[in-house]
Length: 473
Ligand code: GLN
Image (cartoon, rainbow, N blue to C red; front, side, top):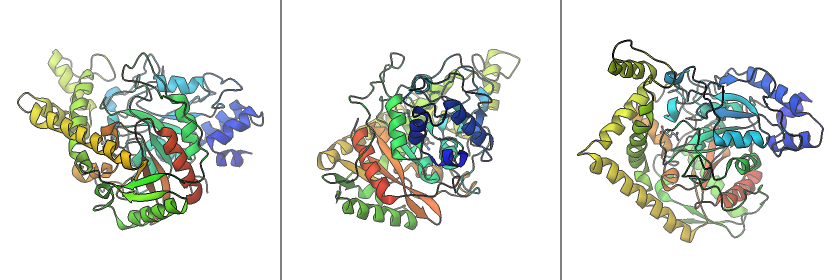
């Protein structure tokens, strides 16, 4: 029975619970034991007893336990956003997205490791040590939602949620061989998510397959009076059923699929394009002329917003407190001890970019580039229904390989950064293997086209038949 539970997707497990074949208590206990066996450093906190709130027997998510990125506030449970500065912080309330999922029947299994304040592409910026990639433990799982991706890939959790600001759901999903979806900006409430860059941050699912992503997303979305930028979805998120791509036009932007994409990734990408045509889809080139400026704009805008958001960590209100002299030394010593090097780098970059005299030259210009990128997508979606690219330029790289070179690290997000800048949704699904490591394929669509994306991803997923989650073999 237990071996069988491990093989079920979350949606299938929820069905079994609803059919009375397995109880939600048994299911929770099974996954609690799996999570307890974590030897990847994927979890920062794990449930040590039965689920807090027993899900209703007919709950749509069937009591299937959920792993949650550490930056979602969860009442009474450590929530540190992967940072030492928040060590020991237990929030007095729960993030709206987590609350909605719990109410739909997905109780909290554990909090997952992440790059500190979601700043990173490898999980090596975590204040609590890096996560290992289950496909090859000497390699990174990607970031910043690396703990969530690794936990799902290794069968330590049935499904998980993360956040994506410049790629942090899709990139680790690609490097760990799971599905990751970044929804349209505003579809999911950001209330209770410890903020990195508020105009970009968006929560979404990391799952074994596309159907599980649709199921989680359906119960995460919605307008929330506590987040004035949340809109919810104009239509219900449907479980995908498509098996063909007939009638869909796919655009391949040369700017995001050319130089810098390693050969093994390119091979899987080309095979995917062929597959799209075999499934009845049309593939054509489409220009996104400003998308290659995405990284430059992102690394001004995101640090600018981060420098403002992180001002609240001053030793007064949350987490650790250092210094015993005057107020200024309290601020300085707390922030010196609590923040890691990348966070400090971003605060300095952001503060500089926003300083008077430079504001227009850096922040203002980056915002104008952002508008151009969004305009490019708008024009492209007049010609095609979806855009397809590799999710990342490379497969998972060795731990330590890029830690000394922030710019090389930032290039990981080359293909994923334009979508959050434009606020549009995108998914990464496993496309195949290169050198024995997973390669992610990305599909992006216009704002609120999640159902179209999920359907296309479902048809592709069935045809690819990706198999081989390392924890399940
Ligand atoms: N890797 C990117 C960064 O370091 C994106 C992170 C994210 O999406 N949270 O900012």
